[in-house]
Amino acid sequence: MEPGTAIRCETSKWGDRPHWQFEGVFLGSDEHGDWIGVPQGTHHHRPGFEFHSDVDAVTLVPTDGWYAATFHRPGIWCHLYIDVATPGRWDGTVLRMVDLDLDVVQMSDPLPAALHAAAEEAGRAAGEIFVDDEDEFVEHQVLYGYPAEVVSGAQASCDALVPAVHAGLPPYDGTHQRWLAELTRLTSV
Image 1 (cartoon, rainbow, N blue to C red):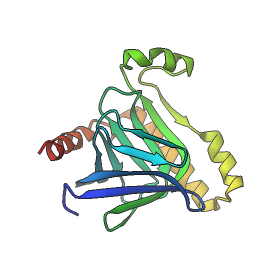
Image 2: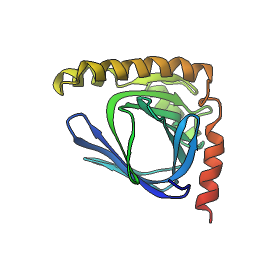
Image 3: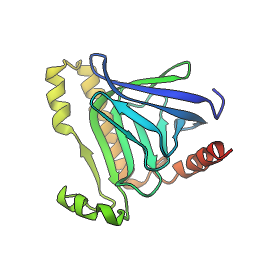
Image 4: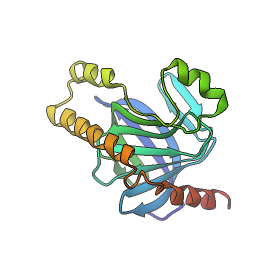
């Protein structure tokens, strides 16, 4: 796929239940996988909720990794939001994956001033790295009958991501900055 190609991301929950959908732009690939640009203002929707991106973001979809890592420009509550999911698969210009509940999140540091109170209320600190929705993952294993290999793949991915983010290992070492610059270049034409 050529850089600048319009793409569509379609995620689902287990059992082919619709989840987040949005448009983006293919930025290119590197040793970490495929990079997708999500410009500020992009409409995201899922059943019962929708929003428009407040800032530019880039998402890394590794070739065989059980996640999609989204890096945001400064200005919102988190710097990094990693959805643990089945490996992403391309169908032409449509990227599909199944969200498996677990999320690895790194709060923004510094937090935008308007978000300090909300972060404190949630018990979160600037720059903090944490796993979200572990309770949902346990509940959905039973409710939706996740196969054992899906449970182990998702948990292993989450268990590997947390120390990698803490240590700032590639691609969590600023690698995404190159792709944010590419998004700016492609969308400012």
